Amino acid sequence: MNEGALPSYDSWNSLAANIAMACWAAGLLIILGYFLKLMTTSDSKTKYDFINKYEIKVLWIAALIIVIGACFFANANIIELNALWIFVRVFTTVSMGMIVALIIQNLLKFYYPFFIEKRLKVLRYKPRISPKTGKPMKLLSEEEEDAYLDEGMQAEENLFSMDYDVWKDDETGYIKIEKYSGHLHAIQCPECNYQTFKVVREEIVREPTATEEGELLKHYQCGYCGNKARKTVNLKVSSKLQEESQAATA
Image 1 (cartoon, rainbow, N blue to C red):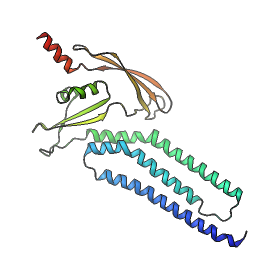
Image 2 (spheres, rainbow, N blue to C red):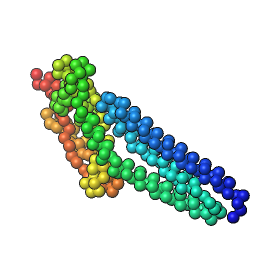
Image 3 (cartoon, rainbow, N blue to C red):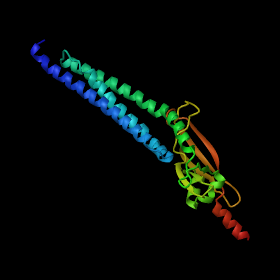
């Protein structure tokens, strides 16, 4: 081996190590920045939406950058290099990097949602504080909240496309309405036990009338094992239909 070629390897090793450190620093800064933003967000609903929209994406991007850094670090100790070693190093590094990235992706996709759902549930039902009195507000029941939801909101709830929580300050009458996705969150699959069981299609079997509830057929499918299931749920009687029926009989 020609000693004159060693400085070029040393230069590459130093560059690769620096790139690795920069990637690790960038990945950690992304994670720290995200959780700093989360900690400085006081409103529970805003925090709920932020976690639901960004957490898995941010962790995946940060993990990918850290894995890339690890690949550079693994190639920061070159002593000898030729055509064969270049192929072996590139193939081994890319293969190991993809395997680690795939493992992390599967953990974030199939296991981490369990952890997120628990946190989201706590945030959703954490008592809201009234800006009028500074006291905890009351979460209204499904029957009580209809008085504060317009026809469009009630229709969304009836079709399970959206869900609304209504918080009320009994002392002042102040109302706060929060909107949530009705069925977009995956639940635990009864077959594989991953949090990947999700509504993929809905169809109305029977329309609700002024006196009788309707029926909605929900089709579930697991994004991991492919398990499928169907569930029938009742559609609440529309308050508008009730009012029209009462007006007709008056």
